[in-house]
Image (cartoon, rainbow, N blue to C red; front, side):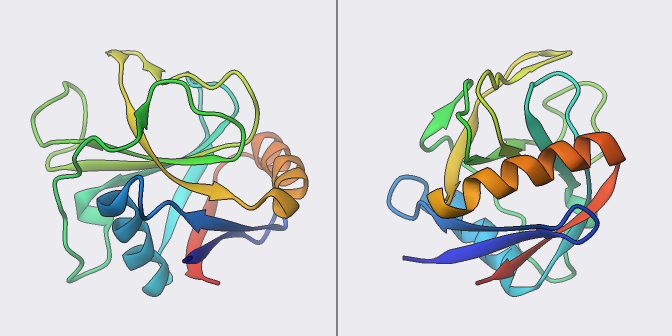
Length: 159
């Protein structure tokens, strides 16, 4: 069992997440690669999808030398649950309005009622990790703090 940690210092977020290697192996490997590099990205509370902290990652923002794989659908859903960590992938040119190149987005869903309805329509994302049960309540409170505070920097680390 591989564990990563999602960290955001201002809110106190430090949530351990179990990678779902069996259900979403390519997506889990992508998150593990980011965690091994201690990658950090701008994150914000989502507008359209409900209780979600969104970590948009145009391919140009990935760490130098990191693979930029086409992520297949695996364990995909349009309705993430509280504690789900999802990875969305949109290929270059597939969706109007996105930056050039492939586009990745990590979604940290902290409450019920999540839905992946975007301004351009419904998408699916791969459920590739879960916040550990013992970390979920604190992570939910920390995500509400992020919602109140605004944009932040969220990092991935190996646990």
